[in-house]
Every structure is written in structure tokens, then in C-alpha cells.
Amino acid sequence: MRRRRFLAGLLGWGLVACTAPAGGAPARQVRGVLLQVEGATLTRVERIRLRDAAGREWVFTVDPAATGDQPDQRLDPAHLRLHLAYGQPVTVHYRETPAGPVAERITD
Image (tube, rainbow, N blue to C red):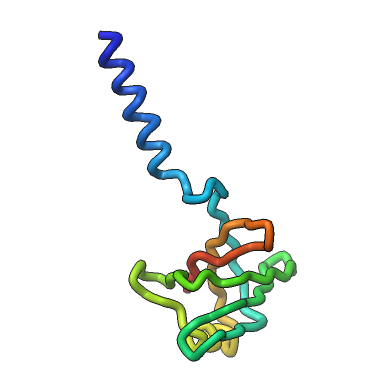
């Protein structure tokens, strides 16, 4: 009986460990309108600036592996510039780093 409880406890902790974000930093998110989109190339976003509903401005470095709404969808500067032009909000999922926030995913 004790062995079953022990194994069940290990399984539970294993599931918690598997669902924790990589790198130990908790995933965070903020929603707002884009103020600036900097593209490193035609297909890669390097940095974005966003204003949230409270009026706070955020600057994010964008992870080259960042995705959009679909896991296999890469972000491109043109799509984000459409959001910028029309004032359509986006949600930025990010992690904090010593160098500042890094966007891991940006969704419509």
C-alpha cells in the first residue's frame, strides 16, 4: 500500500515538472496594441513595442522561434504591421530574462 502511494506521489510530481515552463521562469502575458515592429529581415521580427490597456509601454525582444496562433506558424513583420496599422490588439506571451522580456508567442 505504501509503495502505491509513493509511486502515485512520484507520478504526480513528474506531471508537475513536465508542465513547468522551460528555464524555470514562469510564462507571463500582456495584451495591448502595437506601437512599433522592428524586423531583422522580411521574415523575422526582432523587437516590438506595445501599449497595454493601463497605458504602460512594453518593449520585447522576439525569440526567433516565436510562434503565432498555431504552433507551426512563424511570425512575420508584415502580419504584425497590419495589427499596428489597424490598432488591433495582440497578446504577447513572454518570459523575463536578465536582459529584459522576451516574447515567445504572439497571438491575435
